[in-house]
Image (cartoon, rainbow, N blue to C red; front, side, top):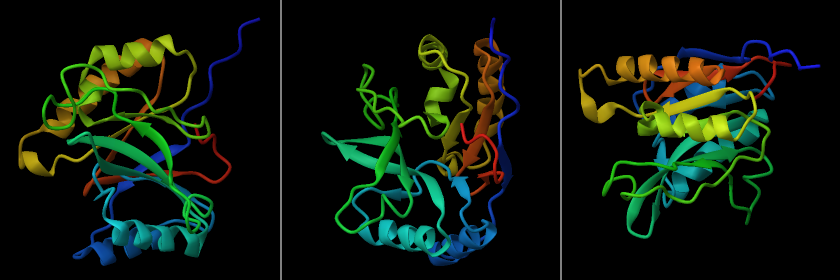
Length: 206
């Protein structure tokens, strides 16, 4: 007998609270979350080599026992690459490296990737699956998820600060919504400076 499809995703999109400084932004997001809560932030929140930013976000996670999935820009072999790190008490322990929930498989050639797909860094299965920015527009990114099976929510992380008033977020949501429907998934969006995803207590994380 076929299993029934999962219920709606527990991830809820809310406006990102305003913050004039990075410190103010961290505090506003931290204070928004309940003790033990989970959140997904957008793409390129900080660079992987920025140890002070990582430490500050870790302090925020540790203070409230939070699980934060954060878009981080990594530099691998001379090219920037979008990734999603999981920051929590375990991953923020001294000497430990944060868990990599995902790395972009496809990027903008010469800017956030090469001309060929990049090696996939998978999630540990405890959260949603991720697409990073450009990937949400590309049918073959969604095809890869479909071929992998599963029914987990797809969280699209993006940062459109460089595009100004161009309606890139609107276009991405339309493209992602259409392709998510084709592969039978829920798509949710975390956009740096615009939206944050919160998980309801007791909800299905993936």
